[in-house]
Image 1: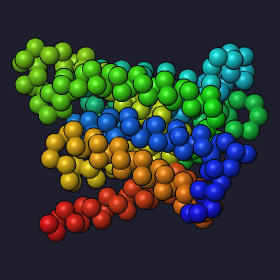
Image 2: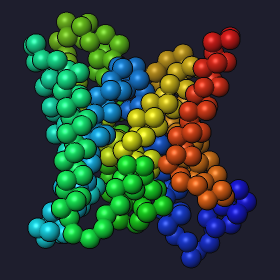
Image 3: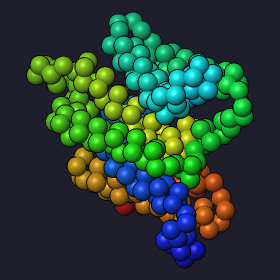
Length: 278
């Protein structure tokens, strides 16, 4: 652990500081949006969105390297696909007679398949493991600015629509009777979840993104008496998992993403057992 702090202060190792800063900045929207996801119980929808991101990542790389669109890239492609997936899921949720679980399964598998096809068609070697399981140490200064911009957008929208989101999450029928545009609010909540997942994929990858989006909020929910306290606790828990996961993985030479998830899962297990006993 001491070695991690020594390297963190080394001016010749800026990538480690970028990775830690992005991880801590990302903990804020993860904790806030993750609390909405847990309360609303849309973890399966978030899972479908996260697995669709591979299509955007592969498509962005293909357009950048083959077509020559320099302004495209894996992050921008993932952002576009995430919003499209959110729109499809919102449409399926409110369309009469449409089986939402079938749409979730289709997006889950087809998004992964399209992404792998794009990666295979892109010249040069592209390691899909870094996208599937994350590699926070690959984050650079340009990625940090992009994450910061998305951070501001997610936080701004979540703060502005917080009362409406509360009504939607706890009693959407009452919100509809009060005249709130629940369909539009549900779509907006899915879009915020999608943008948050785009941030999170760089930290722990597509496969494990749902764990870090939901586990900190679930842990905080065992102790908080309201959703405000749940959000604060989720932010602190998420930041702690990212920091400790990076320190432990560096000291033991292990992949960062899986270490972060294992810490979160272990903490959730302990807190759940303590809550059950209490």
